[in-house]
Image (cartoon, rainbow over all chains, first blue to last red; front, top):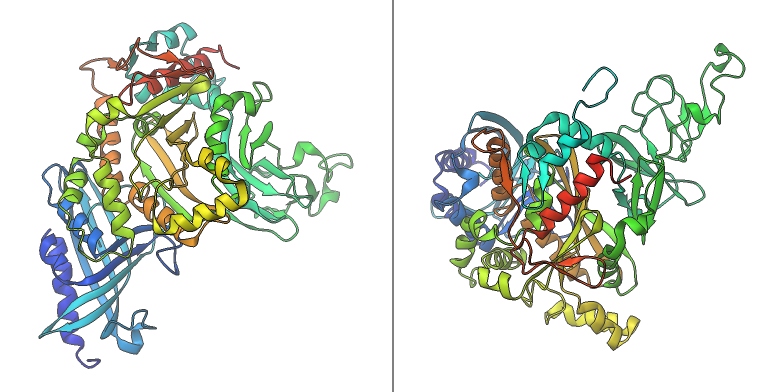
Length: 163
Length: 449
């Protein structure tokens, strides 16, 4: 798999596109049945169980989060947020650092920048991502995803659309 | 404000802003009133600074603000806790630049290297011979880091007041000491500690809004409609490591019918603006007084330490959010505190902390973290709808469509509770809002010291 960086790259681009186009159900479908999605609140946070997080969703909560994003009465998304993200600096396997989950076939590290616009204000988020991927036919599924924002411990305002 | 820093708002005008059944929109929108609040309310009242466990060892420090005043809480060499103005006695720079940490010997100002002990004493001044002989001497309190006028704690919860006058902390808290007891007594070892990081968020709205909201029983069904409905439709057979279990249950709980708020839930208010919600939910996983796998272990530890009767008494307290006006909101059932810091009339910062009950099973603390993520995290599917609401209020109170905001739900139906406070008719009352504004008028109009 380590040689197949193009396939991984296309998968991450696809994921980013689904989020930017607010296709949240399709995004959710990329995750495995026992996936977790984590946005730590501290740089280098060791685990999501002993400290609070910006987001720590197991599969069940991720489903609820996505269902709520699609609910017409989501006040925090009236008007809707628009995002545009660039994913790059992708490295695979051993280059991506230690594998935190033996359940993944492949660990991918990347960097992203995301502009977020809502109402009359634009914010910029940036950081690193690590995906634990499993093979699924010609493509992948996300077994876990960790997003480390450069401003994770900053005084942030409400965040509705995932990274 | 005029040149002397005095506000031009007359006291009579303050009285006209607040009446028992309504308040003027300016209390949420007027920058001059905010300036006056910093002086008369945040400059006088006891303000929560931190918990003693945030400065465990001598040399530990934690910096925060009282109103807009930067302060630092320290543990001195003799073990005593101090709260100091975070300001160098020389050129006025912040001495402590980090939120928390530890110094081995002394604080050292970044500018000219003045050094201060952790009790604020000026220790040394580089090139001191350049000053007149009796001027800027080490130990001279005029050039130290000035201690905040009054500092006291209730069972480890450290408060400070910028005013040298006023009621003692225990008088200020009054019956609310029992809410702190409720939090601390739940620890089998009789102690709690701050742990698990800080959940921060900021919102564009007045600082009063969060105090009004957390004990507002009427808002969840509309504000949180999207997360309530999303949680109701969630398939509980889907895999969870505990995060989703706690979060989805709490979101569903937000959908409790108004009937429950009217018939079961209580709201109490006390002098100095304090209040609490009681008899809230009794869901087995959400309230530790009920059966739960990790709860059996906890119950055994409690009964071993306190005996069965006392344990039953402690766990029989069903308080939800307690508001300590105007700086702190906390909740013992899931061991959460929120520190509210005003920034501007339309800008507020909130810091969420978790507590670990010493002697309780580790899994209980993990539930505390899970609960914090759904209630205090800045990307919470619940909290984000509250923040949007605060922003819309911020916009609406600029409107001249009407000057008045009613606070009259339950007015005239409050009864004295026998502990110096009042019990509202039910959990949908706005008693806590009226109570806060009664206190606000006293501070702002000059009746309270």
